[in-house]
Image (cartoon, rainbow, N blue to C red):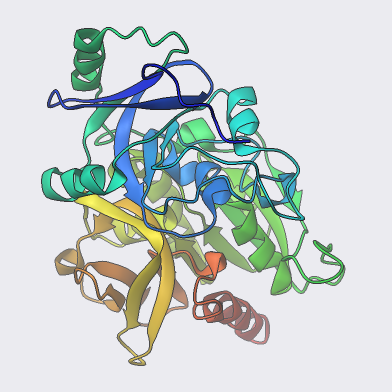
Length: 388
């Protein structure tokens, strides 16, 4: 059932520049402060809200039909929503999908996430593109009582994501094994019963579907916390090392992640594969730099060109920082590039099976354009096993 239109607004979004948007609140009540971004994907709102890479951010969905398929436990990328809030054009309606287990509104309320509907998301998206990702305060009060001056002040007081290490807030508390493979009809998720390669995955905010893709390519995956040392990684005697996606400023996370990666590269010839924040961590470890983007890349329609094959892949992206392609040192090759703005989307070492990409090959908007990257990782581990 659609939300009943209130006599007065029950939620508001206040930007640090003083702009205020009023709408209908749903989900949890209260107030939160974060960076505002927009996502252009037409599907996957549940996966977006549970993607750890969205820590510290409120997501504006440019597609208006949010909530129409409900939510279900199988589509969570982690245990609970990580994005701080949700902004949509139309209020969520009663879900209509055979996989739906509950409505989006109740799911958000139970998990403490605030949302606002009835917003001119086109206007808001234009503002984000023109001015950069703003700091905002989002409030939901069923009685419609808001202290606008206090909300604007709260938005202005937000520290922002630059210099912020959020990987520590979303990583696992202790190591664990992962053997669940990708969803397949009609069995659903199946366990990997015959793994060929031992992989250590560093959890900077890992999505479950990335781990499933590793398992589906024959990997026995051990997930370690973001702060794991090289000694802890190598103690598992892996055939390869994976660097996961995650939130926050890569330079801040790199304080402890970069020394670990450099030690692994110095002490071994193991294949290393990174995605998103893992891509940025590898780039920093190899001597490159990262930069804050104006409004980032968030969506499932991003064309990325493989510079070595000429192939264009339609990819899913979620990042507000990027590797500076001009800062790549000798021996590190740029392999992928965004066709939207020319930003770096992939690197590799010239003489070793060590590479990474900025986009999310596991999200499959192509739908299988980028899955070869997981297969390449498995092939590199197999080639190494044949020589040792």
